[in-house]
Amino acid sequence: MIEPELLARLMRLVQQQRLEEAERAARSALRTHTTHGILWKILSVVRVQQHKDALPELTRAAELLPQDAEALGNLGSALHARGRWRDALPYLERAWRLAPNDTGILTDLADCLRATGHAGDAVPLYERALAIDPRSAEAHHHLGNVLRDLGDLRKAVALYLRAVELEPNRADRYCSLGNALLEARRIDEALLRYRQALACRPSYAPAHLGQALVFRQQRRSAEALVACRAALAIDPNFPEALAVLGELEADDGRFETAESLFRRALELKPDLVMAISGIAAHRKMTSHDSEWLRRATSLASRRLPVAEEITLRYALGKYFDDVREFDQAFPQYHRANELCKRLGPPYDAKAVTRRVDEILDTIGDIHGRLGDTAGSESEVPILIIGMPRSGTSLAEQILASHPEVFGAGEIVFWSSAYEEYRGARRQGQSAADLIPRFAADYLRQLRSSSNDAARIIDKMPVNFMYAGLMHAALPRARIIHMTRHPIDTCLSIYFQNFFNIGPYANDLSALAHYYQEYRRMMQVWRTRLPASALLEVPYEGLVTEPERWIRRLLDFVGLPWDPRCLDFHRAERAVITASRWQVRQPIHSGSTARWRNYESYVAPLKALMAEGRAADCAAPS
Image (cartoon, rainbow, N blue to C red; front, top):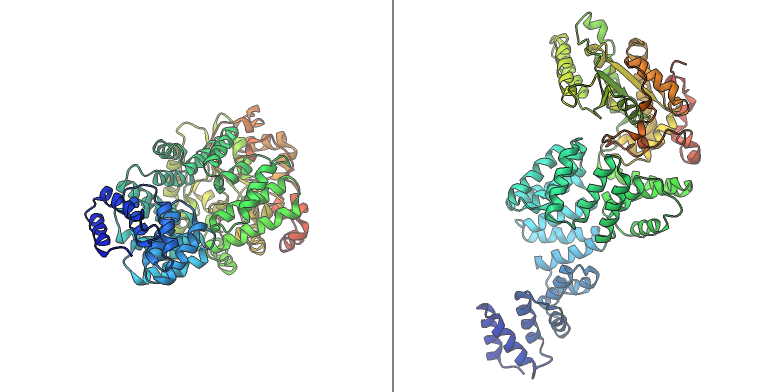
């Protein structure tokens, strides 16, 4: 039996931080008391405080003290810190049973459950830790992490906000909040939080990377690249930053460089979903990509955070579609879309119908109400509209290849202009006075992207809702409406992992309803806008008779023929839409009638054909 005086002396040495003496004394005592658990426990604590490898001592202490929650918890915590979560679990579970109110043990155990794919089991443990210590920023932050994994972004954001309030000087707290806001598509708020993180810690690489992601979504490509390189300057082996740099390279059409960056990221982090999916997104996959498939399917068999599983399932769907294994592709896409439904509100068909009714009531006959109210006579704007995945990016890329045209991407303007116009009407104000200002403000925004182009493209598909207002403000602007087979359009939307499109994209019945409302709206604009303002271009015609339709497009916008428009895939410009790879390929008709490969799965969409396709694809012959 060891003398109490020796144990007391060892404890004093530890308390006085005389760690070298404490280690020598403990080892000396262990020569004669080799199975004394308390000595091993003291020695392990000393080595941990010295930042030395203490795993052998921690393991021995836990073996000899199987009813000591501290010894078990210390070993579990050490294994947790090394990323050995499965090894840590049995020790932490035993420690928790012995000390159910120890918040350190609770959070370590919950962390390991989350890391091993049992996020749901981790939630009550984090909640218990929070109940014990309601002012624990760590517990708020950890619970936010696991709820974000499970797709409950609303609760995650609330928990991160509380963690920030409790610890306002922690960069990681702000960054986690920014990440959750970004996943919730609240990008302006996310940017603010990343900036707050950098104010706390300018060298915090994840916050620089968060800024890069926001800038990319805001079409601020140059700033995104600067922010991403700032993250890599701090940490050259930051795998997520390498993957984002790959995405930025792909935006500029450098797909081989992008893939090399994705592969480098995977060398550092083999299970990085962003990099695995990036490889599939930017080229056609083949049966030779067996190693990619093995890695992706292995990862898909795990319990992943919801956002990561969504990304991976879309990538697997694309792989199987590329290799023409359609019966394996559709279940992957279906799973991805079902998971997407967790991250946002459900589709409200009645609200969409009311919205279309309201818009048509407000601006459907805007010219009849405004009379000769003057907008702008500028011919600079080219407005490309239509359903997503109807060929809007292809049309933009073709026209932007003309030396007198600049493609500005998707400009957010007309939705807010409409809301202002609607508000003025409801309040009985003279809405006619707004039209000239809308025109001036819009042209100023267009010119901020290019000062000297003869024509500037705004490719915002959803502007089909506001075509009447756009024509009232810019009667000489040209509106190009891209059309495509309705089922091909809807299925292509369903197969695409959009950043921010709306809940209709994740359900075939919702897609059918949304498409019907789009069709109803376009039927109104067809009758009320003059032929000089609206040209309808069928995607199928553009890809099967490209020169004919490109000439039509150029004639419509008042520009001379230029053969570079036929070589649009060689144009050097950033493309950030879902079609960035496709628009850099030579024109082909491989995406026409694609829906027939999935005919057994698209029953909710077939009503769109039964109603007749003539209204969608009506275009001059």
